[in-house]
Length: 361
Image (tube, rainbow, N blue to C red; front, side, top):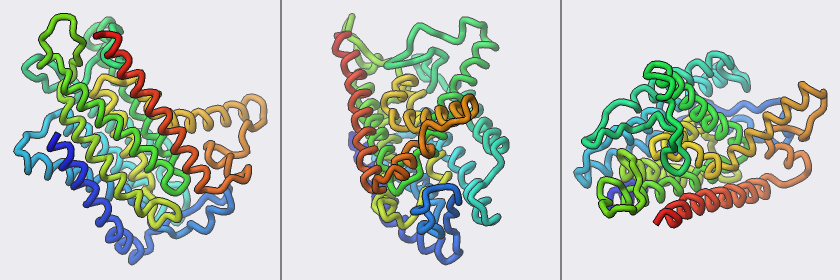
């Protein structure tokens, strides 16, 4: 628990005091956000606001993780390192995308195909490595079983070793792409994605601690439910780092935002959430815990599908938050109400997670 608290505190400090320094750096080089011309007109006033702030979140999280382990003398685990790798890899893809927007003076960065290919490459490397590095009990950071609250009986290995591996990699890519793009779509209003991410990372910190205290490694009583996760406590440390980093960044990202996280941050945070879901064996639970991201992604799917099939739009604009802007809601009102929705989803997810354990006792 000491490592978790140190990690969160250090990441918070790095992010809180590192962000204004990064803002000055970006302003000095005129690295500002470009705004879509077809978006809400109120957003045009945000043109030029420094972007790529996700770099601070990534740096703060890694710094908090490293210092917490140095102070406590606790050796980092492969599960924790791989989640940080996934976060950093996708953050790098987002950074290139953001930098392309700035250098080419446009609101669109990398081509969709190039961006997807880069995301897929990072996801594939993570998925393949996550099935390596078994511990003394033979557990690897990830499992080829589909998981909800823990591993289910559905195992991709039924198709054979090679095909099973391919199916798992595809499954991991779907989760990673879904969460990274979900957070990316949510990042449209000041503080919205950051605040929602704080709640979900907080839930994964609690899940990691709970799984560690009820690990199959230390629970020997017959019939007592336990969690067969490789490094749950270190995953809690990673979640705590991201919780602290997002909290510190939110100080500057809340309305009126002094800096945007950009794709650098949104892809990184979504990747970290996916990595935590895969490593804690809660792959399908992320649909509940990250319910706000799922809703906003669905709004885009519904809008595009409806327009292509019928020529009509369901919402005035997608993603969903922009629909409410055009309806007349104020930006701060939308953000706070969406935070409430995000909190309700997190509460529901944690409730389901705990209820399964209680029923099993």
